[in-house]
Image (tube, rainbow, N blue to C red; front, side):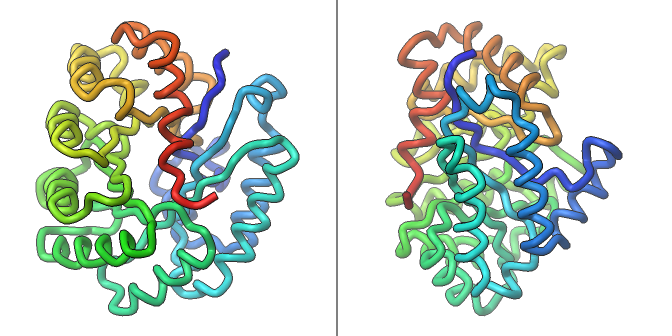
Length: 285
């Protein structure tokens, strides 16, 4: 097993027992800081010795509305999270969902900056972000950029909202305005991986993140399209991630390494993808 940084880790709110996706997501939206600390303590304790030795860092995804209602508690929470993983020498990056309807978004982002949050995130499907809200997202992104906070856009594969909540169109509009901080397209753009790759290739600050999609499509012809997308952007613009607990770290690494090898990424290129690029774009550490 090579060293790696996992850019997409969610709290495991009993998902491994129930396997109910919607229930897990609802739990993430509604959990408190205490719930999250319990979950990430358990995640750390459950990591195998081998993974702890090879894991250079994780980017924690926070969906919880708790922090948007209580931003003053973000700083202490992140310090506690870092303490959990410090003993294993695992670096921590933090990404938090932000509501584009929030008129006080500057206050929330100011707290994010004070708390060393690395990225804000838009999730079109789960936040129901349609084109009427894109201008708000761009405005929020511009303020985050001023605070040296990067942007993540969930560009996953579908749902019935595939066209109504057009995440790649949102990403395109953000790329038009944001060029000083990294903009990361999560889940490779799903079934629109080549479109996502073309967006990233036309920027100096865009990245494709590989969580969930390679494993989900590994037995489909579409897997070849994913390879084309990765080859198009090259190893310096790809960030490895699992999407734990929706995909286990072990099975994610197995399918991802197979994918990267089939793209003819080796040695230094693999190091870029597996950990180098993620470490480079962590804005606060």
